[in-house]
Image (tube, rainbow, N blue to C red; front, side, top):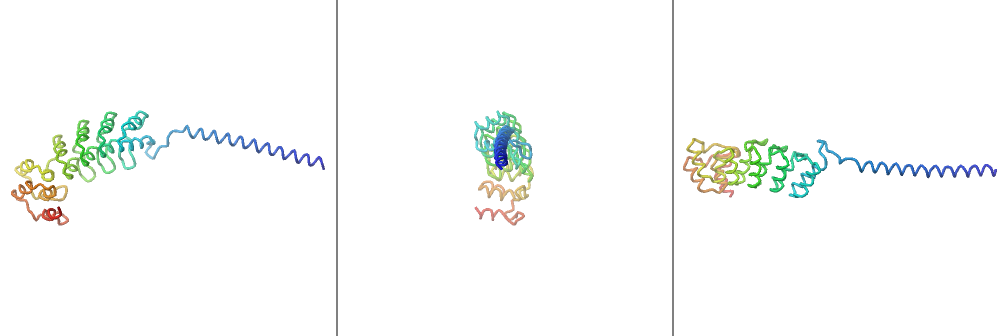
Length: 251
């Protein structure tokens, strides 16, 4: 009986030792896996872009020049895109960070890249009204004739927001000219030139409105008078029934 007890006690001791040894090995394995995971490269998204690329876009949006420079030095893709197709250059242009725009262009950013809406950095800078950025982009070869998915160009975005300086800058680089654009910015000289060349003052253009309605919306009384004297129809309606008089009443 005593022998059996001693054997039982010895068996318990061996089980305890084996359990302790297994715990040690398991702990060592966990530590090894933790170290291995820590050494793995940053995860990539579905397009193969690393987290650094997303960080670059966020830094460009914030106008954080130092961080943008640091991330580029670490290998971030200057032309990497987020899920909406925006690059660092596009967000920097949209938010007006001229120093970041210049840096990205110097590092090889694609000047005519488009987001999912088909909009280029030039369109975004023209939309928001940043002449210095528009000039940087033009100097780097931005195409003034590029259109987004709605058929809008940079000069149309600028004109629709009454940015006359940017309109003229873009037109100096070959951007389109028409009555609507001239009327929106109150460019009477351009209106006269276009009318003399045979432009139809009552034609509905890209905003689905007449030049007269555009001049009214822009608040350009001299342009309104010029168009009326040139035969503009005050009752001409847009597809939704809006006329120049309705535009005037809404101001």
